[in-house]
Length: 494
Image (cartoon, rainbow, N blue to C red; front, side, top):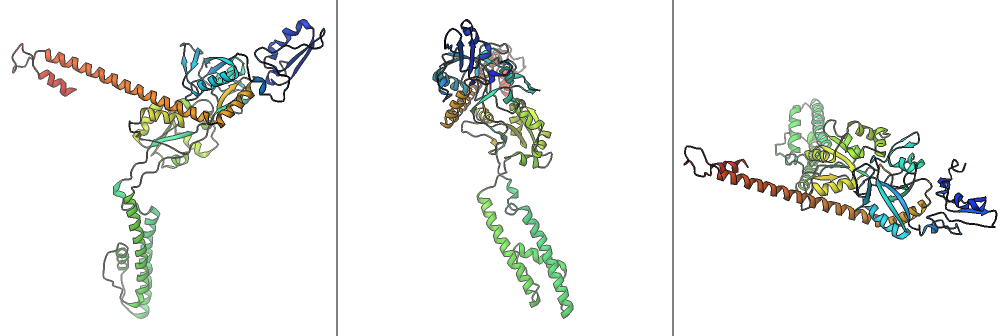
């Protein structure tokens, strides 16, 4: 009855049992009370009897629920993990699925080491058998969340919390959420042959064209009306048109409009041309002094608003699982829907190579892309062709530890995580782990390049030695003598 009531989900409920003295040990160590913090057994033969729950110490007061877990007495937690840099990384001790692993160079490595020294506990880590966080179907989950739901493990790291997962596991926020960002080419200098038209926007150039035509027509109409009233000579429309363009371009031309009747119309246009010309010259000087660059892609809105067919985009294959799928499968935002209709799932190597080709954007988590670009696409001077958007797309809630329902130390872990986050230690660990991974990747790249160069050098010398020791069959050479002709041909081919 107590098991069906879900007592395991409420560890701070005080349990009082009345029974025979001989049953005290069996009752208090029963699996039903595995998460219970306070359990009292009143024996018939004695006024009061108390047995401690193994692995956890009981306190007499419940005024501070965190103080009771200052020392966990060496309790061993069963941990299931999925590799997710920089939060979780490990060394595998076996090739079979679900093998035991050991944390290394990750935030979890620092967390377990620090917390175990503080709270006195140990742990055993296994990789998640399917390497999946899990999806839910009618309340039943697979993957890591399913392992915690079935109480096969005590702690799972590093999942994120969702409304569905909250029904199957408890959660302790451990790491700040990382947004999705778009990787594209860095802004490049605009072509020089457009420098003359760049000072004004397209709307301004269009307005000048229309304004010139309107002024010419208006001046011609006024001239026609005045000519009929005064019987003066008439001018053609083309005369007004050409004069208007000449004044706008500051071209010296004789003024055909000498009569006082046209002075206001022509003078107003000349003043307007003077203002436009001064603005254009100043803007042109500034554009030539500081060259303009192409506008980088910052948001999904900018990407999907580009003319159809000119840009393509993709998403990292490892992202297309777990809660990220829900963003694209059931998009409530029309911008996300347009993005989801066109993107392709690719590996990060292929995605970044396509970005280098131009007119392509690649979506991924900010810290992962930053490490990959700094490791494999940045030279010794820190130059890289990629640009990461500054406006991130928040998709996941905060990451942390998933804990099986009713684990008594959940509130204690959550409190300590909060202290570590407020102290800035989480951000420090994140920066250190990312820097370590970048340096490690770059060293491996240099070692591989050195090995390839050594192999190529050894292969070249072996071929040169073979060529120098061979005899040439050319009629121009003396038979039996070594000839340099094969060596020369070999060098040219290399």
